[in-house]
Image 1 (cartoon, rainbow, N blue to C red):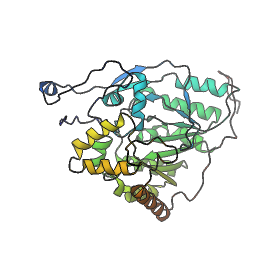
Image 2: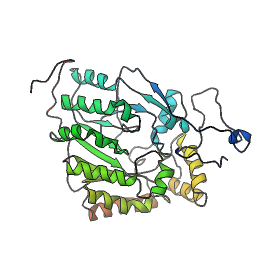
Image 3: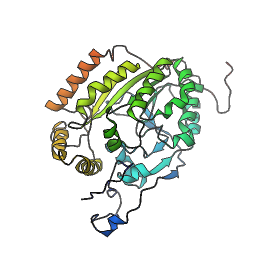
Image 4: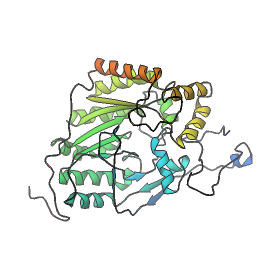
Length: 352
């Protein structure tokens, strides 16, 4: 077992891609190869796709379409369900996921073409349905900002979820969208324990900065909520109270949560991380996760995969409802506006 922890990375292993006929892996990390291991550097790849939206058919997701300007995510959250999707790009779900980032540079152009088409029926789209649209490379590329400009131009509603305070760079556009009820922003906060954050999701914004996101957006009239996800029994399940309390104080109106599930290659990646960072309780945590999903850490069942089932999952659910009541979360229903959409031809300017 690899006992060397590479700082700044969530995954500590790079398991073989299930689609590869041949693969390369370090079989004995305790040998000399481990001493010569170089720090992993992030690489970027440009993608020239012809489509940009993904149809969402899951009844567990409130959006019909998701848009991901980037594939792979440098944030490095070890539990991320999107890790498996990186295998379709020919990479591993492990360290490759957070160090080999695919950039969809044409995303704003493709979205504009879609909105201009008569086939498009105005409906909310979700940014970061798979990977964070405000991960570090966005500071340079500004693809997410350009996407929001297209949504504002056509007045198509958009939902955003992020862990990065870079979103405040686009406060001006978010305010303009909010004037027409065209945007809702969820900030993902797993805990308020910074030591845990550095292990669990090493390249994300600090928790205090994420609370600042909620506070700033709320003050500027932008509908904002908190996503306390994922809940990992034995790791951060007892942190829910403080997360929801702080988020509510900052101005969050809504809240949500999910229970961690470890499908596919995420299982061995997370198990390795768990054994390195929490060796004293690794097996207990693993068993508690399995208890939430019918005895298996994987769960692909619609209706149960997000929240889990069984005694532990029920306790988490009851706590969430109790705290939401206590902190006045989810009391008001908010709906994105699909009625003001304006179809423009490519290159056409809005008159008013």
